[in-house]
Length: 265
Image 1 (cartoon, one colour):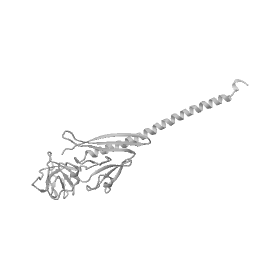
Image 2 (cartoon, helix red, strand yellow):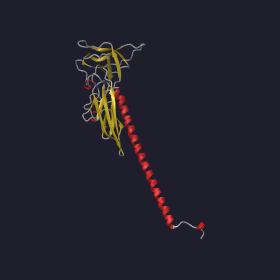
Image 3 (tube, helix red, strand yellow):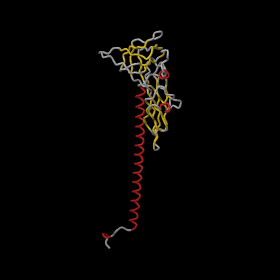
Image 4 (cartoon, helix red, strand yellow):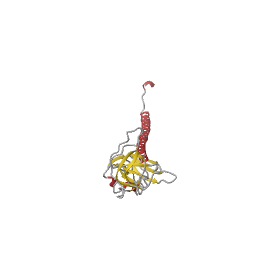
């Protein structure tokens, strides 16, 4: 038999098959490892996107809140505040012993029936409570719709109130805030929900207390969430600290976000 007609020997075939198996296993391991890295990266990116969406949404809403209206429950997994829906500058504020059921205002938007107005809000309890029967306090309720002035530039308008009112405090900037209903975020299990449209008369700061409102899922796969408030002082504004830990498929992402609150009365 000539050298040209010679085939592979059995040993050569075994060696070739062994080498091919080793190479295949190595390539398979590399592909499997690369796929695992890809899956982990995708999971992490999804958790980061969820966290960014929630923190940016909460940051925007918290910054548009009535001063001193933010509250956190004892477990620090529910946070609530009252959004500003309108603002106005007043001409003169009735203060004791003067009483009036009309305010002269220059509002940013038209006022509606049952809009609540507050001057120098000092605590959340003031905003949630009904105006006192004697009309003394910091909150008043609009008794009828009040459209904006049609003059250019706009002028102040008369806004009717539900009762004769005398205010306890005067704003240095003659500013008042207008609001209607609260807003809250709560962690339930591993999911974060947003609550809106529930009444100021809610009985507790918890999902049970928000049952009369609307509930929307904002994020899931949350291992831990915590909300804290650093109250304002004479030298700085208030600060809300948001802390989230997202976990999915053994991937964990921690997010800490601070929201500055402008508490200008």
